[in-house]
Length: 235
Image (cartoon, rainbow, N blue to C red; front, side):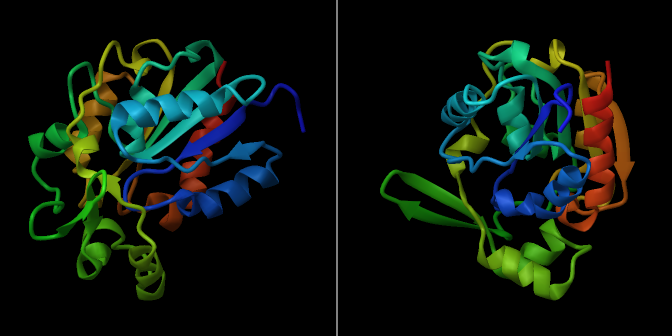
């Protein structure tokens, strides 16, 4: 493996776990990248940011930090190890600015089908977990995947604490000082394409549009990998 290559850190979002990156990981490893995909606790934006910072502390050398969906908010939170991060890649993801939350950004633009009719809330000893109703998973999250794949993803959801979606980003967002790329998914019914384009333009991200659902790491891994490699190769 070439020493000059950064480690690729893939951070999953809400309603999925690190397995959402399986095909992306396989393709990156074939190109001799070291790839790590931590499991986010998804208990809150600030606690998830602290968790990711502690994970990055275990890695030697530079990294390209990739976030899908809700994880875009996590990688946008100003990391204590900002000097380690070569680039940020947002994959159908939130790119909040100071004092913005994922929930507010998703409601600012029309087109999302995440809402009271499609979401389920489960009380837990520490809060309330948010799930996507099984019967809604295909339409809202993974419209370009097979019924068999959707059934597995819906059954293995990793929930997010509902308050995490309302926590606002504190301090200056990381994308102000770190080069960023954005995979914008044009058939997305979870985060509206208009919201993705707005956030990417504001962050001056290099944009790559893909005709895909929110589950783009699964349905179009090659396009996601191309964007990550482009970010990793930039100087």
